[in-house]
Image 1 (tube, rainbow, N blue to C red):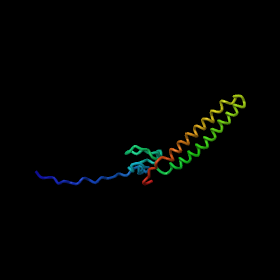
Image 2 (cartoon, one colour; image 1 turned 135 degrees about the vertical axis):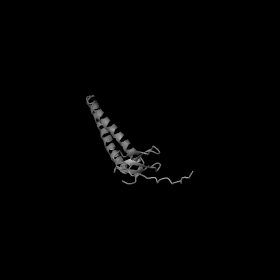
Image 3 (tube, rainbow, N blue to C red; image 1 turned 30 degrees about the vertical axis):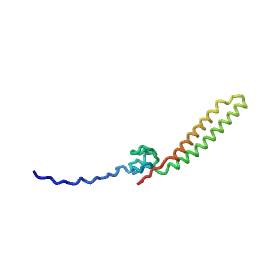
Image 4 (cartoon, rainbow, N blue to C red; image 1 turned 90 degrees about the horizontal axis):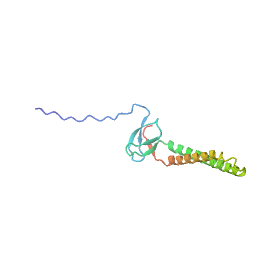
Length: 130
């Protein structure tokens, strides 16, 4: 029986994405590179370490914007709540119902402020070929 020659394995081909909106992203935590669609949300989850990071530099801008909106809404909401509380005290309790809107505005401002701080402290993954 004749021996067959041993051939080398065929070279591995790394296929490029067909869609033009795909790009490489390097995880900010473990530096693993993976594909990411730029049309999706900017928050990405690494398939290797499963940690969440932000792709691109828009997290800083979004965080600052949410912090500014949160501070303004919180101050306006607390001011409206205190104003209606003082009006309710001076008028004998007629305007008690309107204080809830200011409270909800202050609460939404506080939530926006917390979300802005979350975006500012999140790690940023690098986009390899935008």
